[in-house]
Image (cartoon, rainbow, N blue to C red; front, top):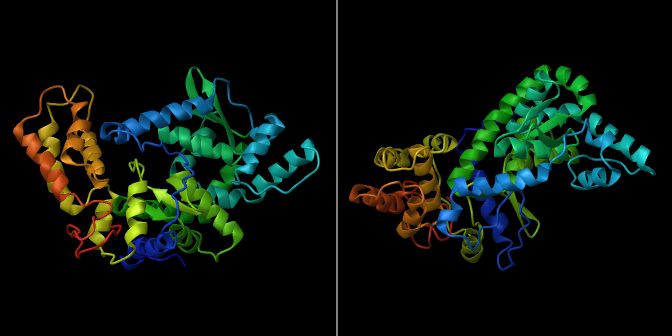
Amino acid sequence: MPGNFLDTSGPASIIRGAIPLLWERRGRELDFHMKRYIDLRDASWAERTLSRMQEARREICLAMFGRELPCAGVIDTQPIETLEALIAAGWVRVSNAPGDMLRRKAARHGVMETLADDADCLSPQEHMLVERMLIADGSTFADTVAEMEAALTLRLRLWADVGVREGRPCVRLDESLRDALPALLMRPQHHQRRNRVFVYHGMIGGLLYLSGFLDSRMPQERFIAEVLGEKDTPQARRLARNHLEASFDMAELKGCQLLLHEALAQPEPLLEMLCAYGPAAVPGFGSGQLLGAMNGLLPEEAGLNAKLVRALCGVLRPGTSAEDVAEELRLLVKQGATVSGVREALSEKLCVMPGRELDNLLRELCRLTPGWLSPVGTAVPSLGGAVAGVVH
């Protein structure tokens, strides 16, 4: 039976479990295979803000959508070379078959054989796009970065094709799936699993807010046990892996898949520190902190965030949200940004010179915000204990 996601001993164990798994790789060269991730190792703090990263990701997505209309289905209408490249990504298990026609038939069988389980385990954005395509004429626009990335993962599943219609990114559902999916989405088991996916997704998002990154094996195990409610099998691991890869940013360290917070612009220093010093101690955290992290703001961060938002109102360029800017600055500090780095990131968003009050708040932000990796010998604010290179 699915467990209690909000049991603090469970989520804390995921962070603790990531430490020895990464410690095994100490001394090895960091070898990242980026997935949906922008390499910003040489970028300034102003270029590492979440909004700038989203702009870069949007450009990449638009290039991948191309300029043609999406086709009725990648299995039957795309060139066999394109289909083979999608199959090679490993999202669908397709048996070997001689000849193009039999290969396409095998791909269709692979999709339909596990369609119910795959539908249960879609990412929230993928599920939303599928529902919109079913309600409409089988296609829908994908205007945001999250929607475009979800459309691209649906293509990897061989469920849909992407393209451009009326000058806007568009995704089109495979014709055969338009007939099969409605009944599958109405199953009681589907609704039960989607409810568990919702809670699970929030929990992992909260843990990433606390730690910045996670070893994917622990979340994968929890997905199998608590969302699927099944034993660990190759099929269950495939479903869990696809969900994590569709839902979160991922990178690879010598075969170890890592989940990254979407705002983490440069994970290498954090991992180098962790691999160098190992798990001296791992602080715990209460349910209140986890619940706050699931909403993107720890209880100890709320007061200062409110002050910063008020101070930003009236000094930002038109169309810039004070709440969004305050969040971006807080996430930069979690990655190690100093006062000068925060000032640099903020300077591009201001329409007037900042006053002393705002500058003092930036100093306070850098002093009090819990970081994603504590420097050696420093205390973890509000999480207790002195740590040495420990994720918190």
